[in-house]
Image (tube, rainbow, N blue to C red):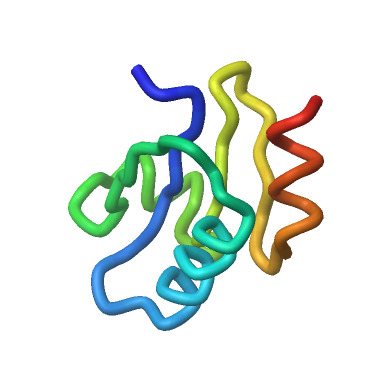
Length: 75
């Protein structure tokens, strides 16, 4: 299991922007979870995606930036 998970949707321009931020922050490894076909994830993240979650459950809601991602990685 990777230490970070990005919750996102298919064909989501905000999710594409979030991926650019993660690349700029040099997030080393993360998994992507698409919420579109999962009722539980849709209920939890539907209005919030993209959301970056650290392995310990701490979440960073969009909009986030490079500094926010780096802070999450360092904590």
